[in-house]
Image (cartoon, rainbow, N blue to C red; front, side, top):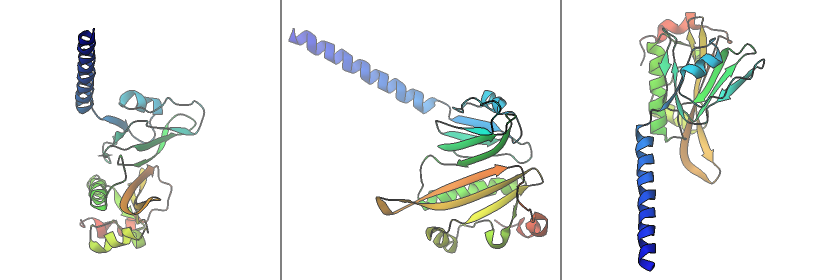
Length: 216
């Protein structure tokens, strides 16, 4: 009787371990979620084309959906497109006609050490610049460079902010802020925020863009 019970327990443990191994294999090979969109297109079209957990539209409301599982963002404008790392927070807002009108996100799945956060931030700025986005409001909000002086500024909690324009189609705000955990005040962690929509700010790009085209 005891021997049979031991064999049964061994088989059960083997089955559990096999299921766990299969789940880990699935998690490792499963494609990362991705939200694909442009400003102005139907939100439901975004859901149909994307592989994500965005919830259905609520008809007749100015509202939005937030992913429940981390997802990359692929902004699919043929001229001004870019992609982001997986984001735990990704919000897609739509107007009362159900069309996408704004995106707000943090392109990371957790708060990051400054080295990692700066790498993400620099890559986003590189993609924007190479895609034809141009900075505006550069005084005193110039595009960030990875220097000891800029890092010191970020560490003070000033949350440097940059503004970007894609012609007359879109505008974006990109900034980085220090995240202080109440139980670990000395732990340096940082959060990037990216928001973009149709233009809503005065754009002085024409006055300054040429000065920035060849900068890193």
